[in-house]
Image (cartoon, rainbow, N blue to C red; front, side):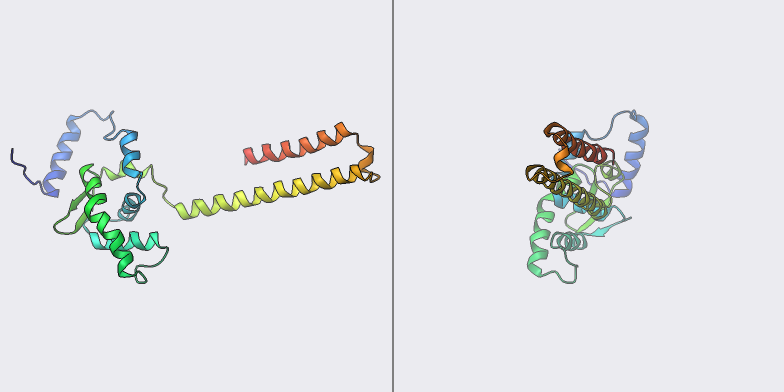
Length: 195
């Protein structure tokens, strides 16, 4: 059986006619297939890079940007070894998998990659701004850690005050002291869940 190559223009025409014949209820991918494609960070980075592009992109440019993201540097500061360690797996494996799934058009012999419309379905599973979301989460977690540490220190001071019988703390019974500590941590936890 002979295999024929369909140009991207012809493929676009074929896809349009096929979509009108098919019911739109079924997604092109199952969630398992999408998660399998996205399990590799380099493939996610490729899709992130291609998100804002229209038309063909050089595979080399993608590899350089992915390497820069992996090494937390700029493309200009990459070493040739860093470039090569990303370029080879992209060339041999990752771009081919995305091409086979129909998310990109990878012309390996020309070193050209084109994002296909099917990639839009995958975008919803990728974080759009990972650095912003992560920074906000870390800041929020850090402030809650501070609240819990402060509450713990306060409770130890109360307990120590009860042991050495400080005037105000010694008025509380053991049950009242325990209930106060429990109430403090309950309020903190509920506040965190609501936030």
